[in-house]
Image 1 (cartoon, rainbow, N blue to C red):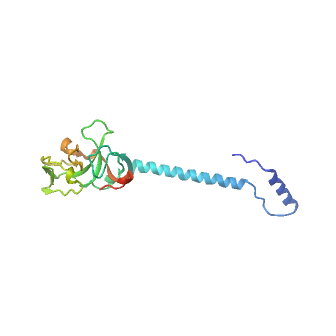
Image 2 (cartoon, helix red, strand yellow):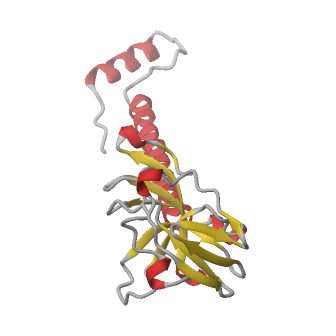
Image 3 (cartoon, helix red, strand yellow):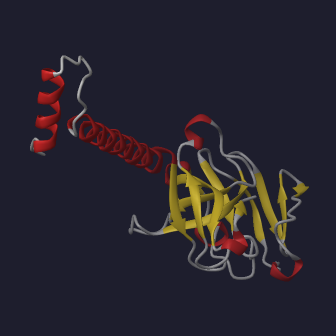
Amino acid sequence: MQIQPQTGDVSTSQAATDSGSSQPVTGAVPARRSKSMGFTLWLRDLLISATASVLIITFLYQPVRVEGTSMLPRLEDRDRLFINKFVYHISAIERGDVVVFRHPASYDPQRSYIKRVIALPGDTLRIDHGRVYVNGKLLHEPYVPLEYRDDQSVAEMIIPAGSYYMMGDHRSISQDSRYFGPVDRSLIYGKAVFVYWPARDVGVVH
């Protein structure tokens, strides 16, 4: 931006010189430079924030939307939540985690499921009329209300190395590992951590 000198500034400067005063004369240029510097700093902060946001979304957290009701009562249809895409690079997948994974029987890479980890690699699992047994012990499942249970059974099996057995919390409607089998580790890409919308569902995912 060009700055045009003002007549008043010139007259004042001349008068000061004639009178022998050594006081500097302040014109409009420093104020405008200050505004320009302020804009530059604001733009820099905006770019840094945008870059940080992209890095966080790319490497750490990703917003996703739930489609379906197989994870009721905690996750409802169209809930929006953040998944942590980095956590399983530094820690192990644990029983009870709610994870997002690509469907093992689908050729569509955009198709993903969200389920709960029920059994880990090497675990022995069987389901007897809806009751889940892992390594011979009845699994305590407070996240599955009585009205969402079913009476389906699955013969005893050992979870293969590098695979995980997934089930939805709404057992009577969930399509999960009871139908498509254990899920390979390479298909799991995030852990559900926090619901941010709608307001009534906001909170940590357990």
